[in-house]
Length: 156
Ligand SMILES: CC(C)(COP(=O)(O)OP(=O)(O)OC[C@H]1O[C@@H](n2cnc3c(N)ncnc32)[C@H](O)[C@@H]1OP(=O)(O)O)[C@@H](O)C(=O)NCCC(=O)NCCS
Image (tube, rainbow, N blue to C red; front, side):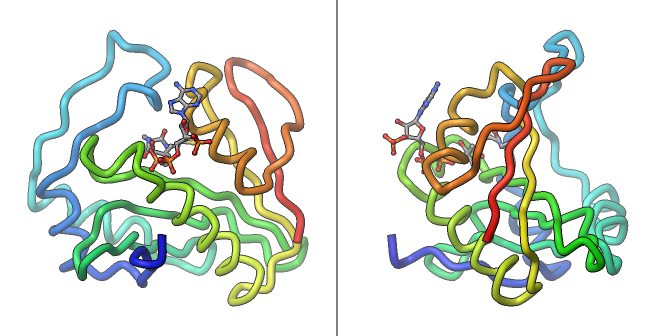
């Protein structure tokens, strides 16, 4: 899947990404609270601003020069050399085609090579078996299940 890359998220890319965004029910713990996503320019600006800072890197998953997903390396702890991965593809058109697997591999490479992390963590809602499968496929190890979440870790 050589046509996928990661790029530092910009405000412009963030708007482009969220203009065609769909929330995925797999990341929603309580479906009574699930709402379809509606683009709101001001909310995207607030979102982008809130994600800036030294403990997080926000990346766009790029295909054909357009954003098709978002990757975050968050809770970056430089002393311990670890961070936490989160990923969400833009909508169903970009799921189930290998792009997420490719993006996770690139995110691990970024965390280990660029951020010099020793380990990357991930936590997933128990029902999200697709995400768990992809995490294991790219090298994450299952640690434990607690309070409805499954915890994973990938060491360099
Ligand atoms: C999770 C996510 C990033 C994966 O990316 P993707 O592009 O859809 O995944 P891929 O196409 O690379 O791989 C999907 C794999 O899961 C498997 N799969 C699909 N549905 C599955 C299910 N219900 N249970 C288990 N495995 C499943 C596929 O067979 C494939 O595995 P294979 O390559 O071994 O055949 C993407 O689906 C997504 O953004 N989901 C919504 C947000 C989310 O769940 N984020 C993760 C939160 S921790």
